[in-house]
Image 1 (cartoon, helix red, strand yellow):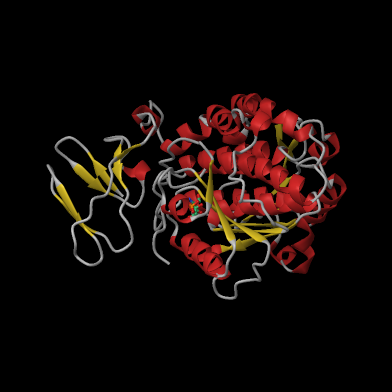
Image 2 (tube, helix red, strand yellow):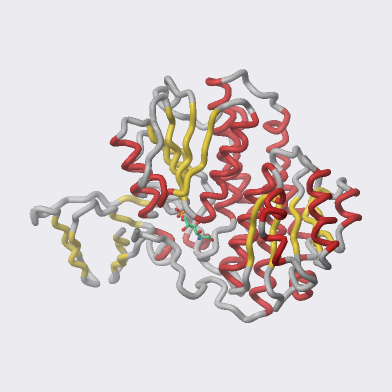
Length: 416
Ligand code: AGP
C-alpha cells in the first residue's frame, strides 16, 4: 500500500502504519513496482508498463490512529471498544449486513478461513452457525490450502482484520479456484481481501495499530454473529431474535467491564509461573484460546488455551500449584466448567473464573473472579474476552514488555 502525503510518501503492508500521516492511499496490485521519492512516485505493472492506480481517500480520522495520551495503542484500543462496537453494529441489527443478492444464493454450508486472533473469531462464527443447525467449520488458513475441503454450495468466509494476511489470501484464492463464493470480513476498505472476494463485510472497528488485536476481535465477533444469523435464516429456520435485540446493550456492557475490571490487580498475582491455562466450553473455547494467545504474545509467558474437556487427555499432567487456570464461562455449560475447575484445584492450581456475575456457582467455587454483566450467552464471549485483554495488558505492563510491538511479530503478516 502506498500512502501519498505532502512532501513525503509511504510504503507499508497496510494502511494503519501510516494513517497518522496521510489519508490518501494507492492500492498496489500484485506484480506492481513503485518507485517512491519524497515528492512523487511512479508505478509500473508486472510487464513494466506505466500503471495508473487511483488515489483513494480513507475515512479513518487521523486522531483515531494516535495514542491520545495513553501509554500504549493496545490499551487505547481496548478502551475504544464501546465506541468501535457501536460502529460495528450501527444500523445492522435492523437492516442486516447489506450482502449482495448472490452471496447467499445456493449456500448450504460455511467454511471460515483465518489466522491467529481472526481464527478465534472464526471459531466463534462456526460455533454460532452450528448452534442454529448450519454446517460450519473454521479452518486455519495456512492449512486450508494443503488439503482443501469440498466447496460445493459452500460460502467461504475469510476473516482478516488487515485483509492482507498472505495465508488467508492464499486460502481464499484456493477456494475461488474451486468455485466457492468468497466473502471477506475485514476492517480495511480497499484491502486485498476486500478486492479479491466476491463480497465484503467491513467490521468498522477503526484503525488498530497495536500488533495485538483487541477491538478488531470484538468487532469481528459481533459481525460474525450478524452474519451467522443471516446465513441461518437462509439455510435453516430463522433463529430466535433475543441475542440480536441484546446487541444494542453490548457497548454499555463493555464499558461496565472496562470501568470495574480487577484485571490489573489479578495480573500481578499470577506472573512468573510455569504456565497459564485458559479453559472454556462451547463458545467459551474461542475466548480461552484468544485469551492465551493475547497473554503469550505480549507477556512472553507460557500460555495455552483449549476446551476444558481436553484437560484429562493430556494437559492435566502439567497442572500444579504454579499453573494458574483461567476458566471462561459464557453462561452455558456451567456444570462442565465447574467440574473442570474442581479438577485443577485438586492438583493445587489457583483458578480465576471469568464469568457473568450472575453465575454465582462458578464465581464462588473459583479462587478469584473477573466478572462481566449478564447479557445473552451468545454475546458473553465479547465481554469475557475484554477481561482477558486487560489481564494480558496489565501483566505485560508489569513485566515491562514491548506491548505494541512484541518481539518477532508483525501487525500484518504478508508472507507465508
Ligand atoms: C494477534 O493479536 C495477532 N495480531 C494475529 O494473530 C492476527 O490476528 C493474525 O496475524 C491474523 O491477522 P489478520 O486478522 O490481519 O488476518
